[in-house]
Length: 348
Length: 50
Image (cartoon, rainbow over all chains, first blue to last red; front, top):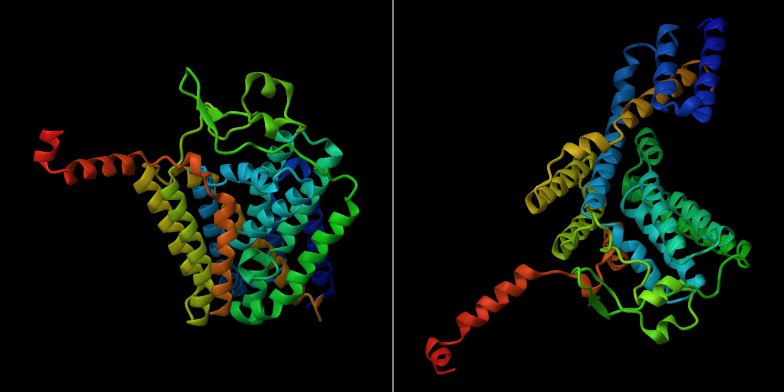
């Protein structure tokens, strides 16, 4: 290999990474990755016959992550996550510290059962909604938002299937999911606990001790047939409920009060939760039996799409529109760039 | 299999966080079905007598 070729590879690598971080005008990250890969092919650092090997390593991981994303889109479309903001406030029972731990648990579980990027995309709006419902000031919202994002990211470490990079790394080093989990669960769980505790300690003063709480069990239906909660005076006393809520006798938040909201079907929810948990567990049982995890992920996504179609009549058109297909180009492009760096001797 | 079991156990708090509150679990179809079954369970003579 000529030195000029190797130098060219380093320049392409640096330009690709710079564009991925900078993302001028919100440029989709798939473009720099694909551009870098094409440039490395053109200067001959990566040989065309190596593309098949790269595809073999990346495709299974990308299909698994795409299927997980499809599952989360299906669940979001049936209102699956809408109730979590409501439940987070309920479980906090008027304590800001308890709210912190409930939010950390939510972020951890979302990554555990979906993936890290999806978890942040799902939980950040939930945390913002919770914070605005509780009328938290900006500095009071920070611990919940930072803590949630940190825990959601760190929660992809205990099991390999929550992160695209983990899945690709597992394929490269030839480690199976169960061995990875055995090795990673103890240290990463300790790490997540330390992250959550440290952030709590750092933000201790900013976290409000008392927050609003939602009254439970007492419902009313107004003249327009709209359902809501009646505020119990004992519950409302000393809380941070807004004046308008106290005057009208209604809580400021109810997931079904939105005009476009529909009444979700609890049996559909139960079926979906059961399926999501079983699919996640099947990754590990199937991996031990030698079944490729992308097959299990695909079966899970297809099952959820079918259930939603049978239950609500909604077809898969919205999934085709919302699924970030560019992940396939991004992962493939980045791994071609990595292969180019290996060929150029950067990893020696 | 141990990891699969751990994942199943982790599904319990997920279930708790996503669940609908008891007041908002609309099951009209089930309620109608129960009413129908109750009606069928009452003998016709007893209904006439009532």
